[in-house]
Image (cartoon, rainbow, N blue to C red; front, side, top):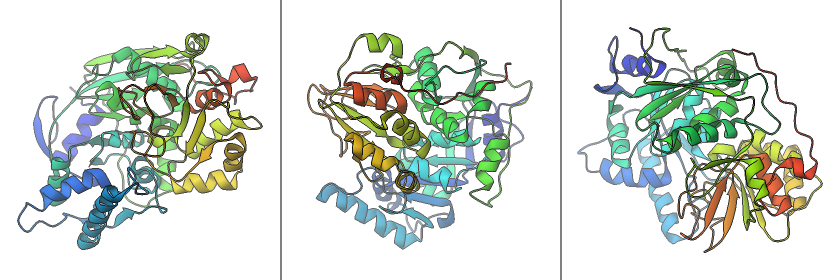
Amino acid sequence: MGMTLTEKIVAAHAGRPRVSPGEIVTAKLDFVLGNELSTVLAIKAFEQIPGARVFDPSRVCIVSDHFTPNKDLATAAIATKVREFVRRHGIAHYFEVGRGGIEHTIVPDKGLARPGILMIGGDSHTCTMGGLGCFATGVGSTDLAAALALGEWWMRVPETILFRFRGSRLRPWVVAKDLILDAIRRMGVDGARYKAIELTGPVIDALDVVGRLTLTNMAIEMGAKNGVVPADAKTEAWVRARTNLPYTVVRSDPDAVFSEVVDVDCDALEPQVAWPHLPSNGHPLSETSKRRIKVDQVFIGSCTNGRIEDLRLAAHVLRGRKAHPDLRVIVIPASQDSFKAACSEGLAEVFVEAGCVFSTPTCGPCFGGHMGVLGAGERCLSTTNRNFVGRMGHRESEVFLANPAVAAATAVLGYIGGPDELGVQPPVAPALATA
């Protein structure tokens, strides 16, 4: 009996020929990630370990991205404590304000995530890195502290659900965000609880690496332990352009046992909108737009949809148009590289001319931290990954989730709608190999 991709990675790092779902193992870590919020809590636990030192400063990354640039004295104190820890332990990969961006964008972009590795991070969306064919998952700050000291992680081997996305051509304006929103709608927010999800099929093969990272970013939104897309030639070219570090391409065995197989026909899939207050509360755009749901804010950005590819799509819709006077629009690139590219390509000017705020990379609006907090009774259409009660601010606010094209169209219309309502011609969707 063969093993799944996830089981193979875990077995290799546990020093065992094979593992099975449900087994408890201790695995060696290739990489450990923290942000300022998870790390400041981990530091407290780390300092209770007598004589503790970071196991390997070259294999640790810390990114200030949640409350940065700092919004008040309390968050400034957090950032200061983390900087002191970084300097004291010689952490090799520290990304300061103005030199990095959002952690789940920075780590893959800088070549720190690659096929076959096992990594954990002090943030639930660490699962993003699985889009490169590795095992990546989020942990609590106590586990993060132990990992920083030992370079090991104690875990239960998850079962794997196999998703097979099939079709001949995606419909206009359908992108990776819609694929994963539809998958979450099918599974529910706990349908894959503590399971790995492996995403395959001709539709996934046709996606670029950025689209695959969007898919695995939201694996946690169906309760998954990790999400993974098997590495292929696209993955390897992307990784080789960013690092000379070694990696191992791993694939599930033909006779691997999956706990469930989910086949998805993508030909008829529309852009999706997740209504409050669950990412699984998905509805087709055609149904949503009929409701003429007015919003007070549109947010384009986050680790899910803040890359330059996402900004290009949003700018394509917004070019030559103005944001509706009854709402505000916030556009935040996920990294300094995307920020610079948006400026050099003229996208920043498109956003500003449309009446949007175009600002420095930060996670702030996504979790209701700063730079986009919602008040009571307000609605936001967001390209982020969560829309739970109070996620972006007041408990009486509402968040709808959609892709960047729908967000940009909504910004102009004043209600949730798509680019077709503005007469915008869509980019050409790639033909898919049927299988």
